Image 1 (tube, rainbow, N blue to C red):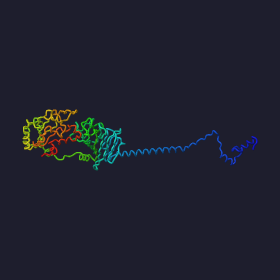
Image 2 (cartoon, rainbow, N blue to C red):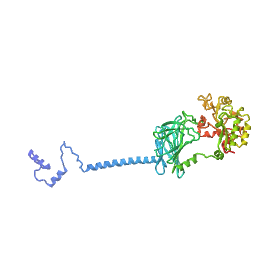
Image 3 (cartoon, helix red, strand yellow):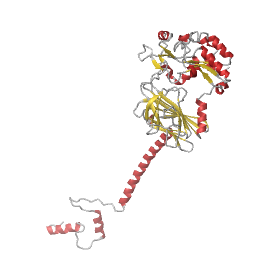
Image 4 (tube, rainbow, N blue to C red):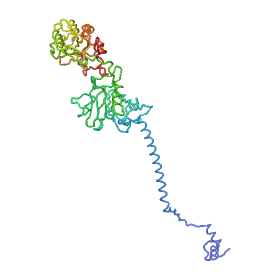
Length: 488
């Protein structure tokens, strides 16, 4: 062991690797590799990635983001495809605000917008040919469906129904007439009549109450629409957007809901498209409009109707009628009917002949028959206040009433002031003369000329306005002539 500091120092140098000034032996190099002495304040530095590695990392992150975006986009696209398929019915495409229909060539031939609310498409579902939705976009419940019907190869139809679940609301859809190349026919008679339809200005929906005009429109692009007869239908238009406003409502209208029926209106109709306008019109006519069951007698078309109104007006009497018939025969004119017109009764509302003007009506009718005339009588639904039947009608509550429902509603017509029968079935004109009508055939005349039975209808008829022309056949004593219009 070294005994002095110099020896200690030399011994230390011999033990410490790298302290010997001479050349290093292999053993010393190996020892130096095994033991490394670091200072207390030493902090290792992280190696920086090479410049070649940075683009690779960025590309990997970007690729991952693109894959995620593609997955999300495909999910949305698949959902959109499923929804689009669910909202498509053959040639019809439904959206939240309406629907459009294409023809077989892919051309749009019909477009309609929902004006009473937008649909919540998430509430829509398909079951076979029926596509239904249960609520609007604002959460209001409703009953809506579109049903596809294919009656023949060249015709495709869609039954559409929108029914509100809450009473008091109106349902309105806007049917667009399209560009100037599309011509539409049908609808109402206008003050200035254009054919095809040409809209002028704007019109709020009004009750669509007509005599023989149908709720039917036809397009030159082979599309047609028929509004159901059960709808409390109102029609308006907007010339700015070239649209017809189809509306159903029970408030502020003469339409009344059927008994035990909630006043929640429905707007229902059928839209059909075909290959050409002729074929689609023929189909709609066969489907919705009945043809006459019999052809009237040819004489009604071939020969004239002679009316006492032309020569005598209200001043008609028995002698004038017989003289009129004699002159017709003397001049060898043909005739289908001889019509006894205005004022053959004591007052408007009576049905008995005026004994002063017609002292022997039975003999007059016999003589007219012998001369070969078929006789017609003019009738109307008004009962003037000076009629002998007016008091009886008030007592039996047979007249249309004013809004309070306590008094008959008097109207001014061109022959005075009177009330109107509230119906023409049941006890209708019997209050005027229960014995006269059934015995009319014994007088020898064949038919009545009915006036004022068109648009001047009453409230209870309006539950189904298409019956206006049918109620005539319910009048006692008249049904046989209405059902069988052929002349004998």
